[in-house]
Length: 469
Image (cartoon, rainbow, N blue to C red; front, side, top):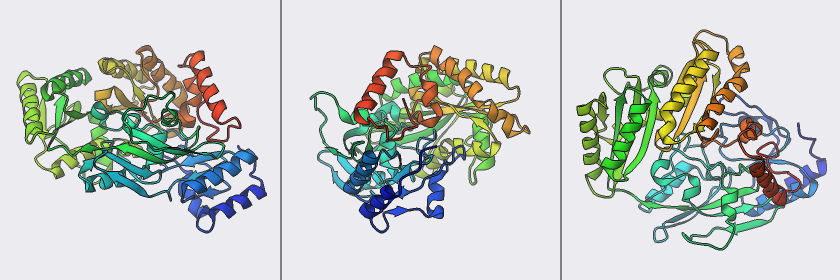
């Protein structure tokens, strides 16, 4: 636990933030101190609520001078605990809510860190543009957190991760200085790129206060379908075929097992089984094109050929936006559908796409040998090799014994991932959950380089001190 914050530091923080810019009210703090799955709870002596970059700078500068640690927090949708303080000052970006600019000529949107991803989508749409990053939590997740965790989402296959969608950043560095790197350039080859250090740094190298984001045209045609397949290997074959059929227009290719679908139907209101009969595995496919009607035609060709040769066992093609939304709802509620089922070992991993089926098969055999009767749910962005691989306690069993073996089980899963050339964190980051474990899978040279970068920018280690190396 962090040492108590000196009274004079709290007084100075209150002075620079002013009325409405801070809180010590337990009721105000409570929702910010709990991770949504209830795995981590925290505490803080002080919630800082800066409204401007200048106020963020003042808060960080005071804390740097006094050696007082800070935990930055966006929408509190993180899944690895990095946003939950354990005695540090909690700096929320929720009041940094301005959309500073939307430019359809530069195809750029400049927003502050507290703007939600959903609000970004709305601002882009008003200018006839699109920001293609999509998350299940987009109504709550904020741009500062999205950038700081290098969020992935469902359309990485076509557009890349957050790192690929950011043109520039504004950030407050650990000493309180403001770095204004809000460029709009697609090309800037002038040495080290500081924004790429800050993207995915989980708040350890500074507080992101604003971002310049890439926008894209709204495509003229879009088709969404769900297809039943026999196994993950069949899903990968269908992915390769979809890429060839659509000529690079595949935006999403999501894998779901039947057990995960059943949890959604059981535990989430207003959901419908996507097909008339159950199947062991499903893929949700979305194709989009700039040519009117082209996406629909490509999808129809893909499904017709798959049904003809047996690669696809059944399929449903959405005929309206409402039907497409209903299909996506099943995918987006996979995690929420699991929650009532009890203690779970959560894994956010990636392997080469060619090894996805091998990983699921090998990992499932290993965890079922460890815990007979455990319920594996594997789902995720198979188009980019990212699988959310979750191991739920056996039905009717107690939570505590299963939760107690979480680290042991994760080691088994992560060792399989490492042998296949994968990553133990595909899109959620390391947080407090995986920071120490990551040392097992990174080389000493890499760890030393990462530590040196952090030490050079934050010699007092005040920024999110329990996260990363």
